[in-house]
Image (cartoon, rainbow, N blue to C red; front, side, top):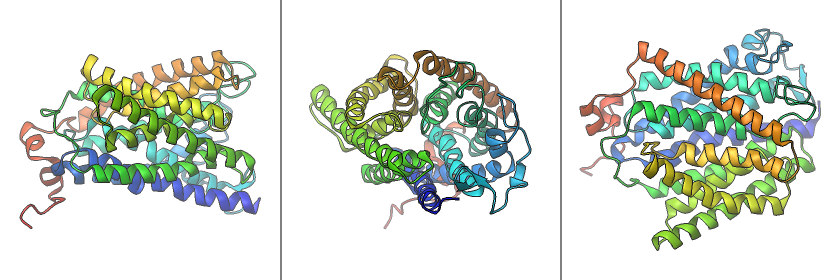
Amino acid sequence: MNGADTAWIIVATALVLFMTLPGLALFYGGLVRARNVLSVFMQVYAIACLMSVLWLVAGYTIAFGSGTSGYWGGLDKMFLLGVDADALSGTLPEVLFFAFQMTFAVITPALIVGAYVERINFSFVLIFSGLWMLLCYAPVVHWIWGGGMMADGGIFGEVGTKDFAGGIVVHETAGLAALLLAMMLGPRKNRTTPPHNPGYVMIGASMLWVGWFGFNGGSQLAADGGAAMALTVTHISAATASLTWALWEKIKYGKASLVGIVTGTIAGLASITPASGFVGPIEALVIGAVAGILCQEAVNVVRNSLKIDDTLDVFAVHGVGGIFGTLMIAGFGHGAWVAQVGALIVVGIFTLVVSYILIKVTQIFAPLRVDAETETNGLDLSAHGERAYDMNS
C-alpha cells in the first residue's frame, strides 16, 4: 500500500460523491419548475443510496470480480466477500478502490434523471435505475476498466479501448439510456417553462466542476504527475467550453445566459473525461473550445429537429460530449481509431438494447409515467407530500 496514493483516492472518493450529492441534485433541481424541485432531489438522493447498496451486493463483483470471462467479473466478490482492510488493489486498499468506483456507479444512473424529470413515476425510477446499473453499467465497466474484452489485448487488438475516466463507461451509456427513456416516456405537457432557479443551477454546476477533479484526477489511482495533469486539463477544458458556449449563444441569440455558460462547463467536463489521462493542456483547450459549440448544437438538434423532450439535455451534453472526447483520443494520436470507434458502437448498441428491455420489464412492476393531474400539480406534493417553497410566506 502507498500512503500518498491512498490519501489522494480517499479525497477523490469524497469529491466524486460530492458531484452527485449535492452537485447534480442542485444542478438538475434548479432547471425544473418550482413544484418539481423536491422530486428531483428525491430521485437523485434515493438513487445514490440504492446504487451504493447494490454496488456492494453485486455491482462491484460484476465489474471487478476475479473471474476470467471477458464479459463479466463473476460473483466471487459479492458483499465484498474475502476483501478485508489488508487486501490490496494495486497500491490501494481494495475496499477504497471499491468505494471510489462506487461513486461512479452512483452518478451514472443519476445523470439519467435529467431526461425524465417532471413526469416520471418514482417507483419506476428506483427499479429501472437499480437494474440498469447492474445489467448495463457494471458489465461495460468490466469490458473496459476491469480487464474485460475491450481492454488491451482484447477484441480490438493489443491497443485496447482508451477511456480514462468514463467517456464511454459513464457518459455514453447514461446519455443513450436517457435519450431512449425520453423517447419512450414522451414529452412533458408544458415544455416552455423556464428554470425556476438559475442560481441553484450555477451552484450545482460549480460543485460538479470541483468534484470532477476527483472524478478525472482520481482515475489515475495514484498521487503523481499523471493525476496532476488530468486535473489541470479537466479545468482547462471546462473553462474553455464555458466561454465558447456563451460566445456561441451570444452570436445566435444576442444574449449569453447564466444557465448557458454553466451548461458549457458540464459539456467541457464531459468531453475531457475520457481523454484527461492522455492529453496535454493545448489539446484540452481544443477539446473544450469545440465542445462548447458542438454540445450546444446537439441540444438544438435533439429539442427542435428530433422533437425529443430530453428535458435537461442529458444526451446532448453528456452523451455527445463523452463520445466526442473518446474520438479525440484517437484524433490526437493517443489511441487507435478501430478500438475507439468499435467500443462506441458495441457499447452503444448494448446500452440501447438492454435499456429498452429494462424499461419494458420495469413497466410490469411500476407505471412509467404519472397521470396528467399529478404532472400538472407537480410531483413534489403529489408524489412526496412536500413543497419546496411556502408560497404564502
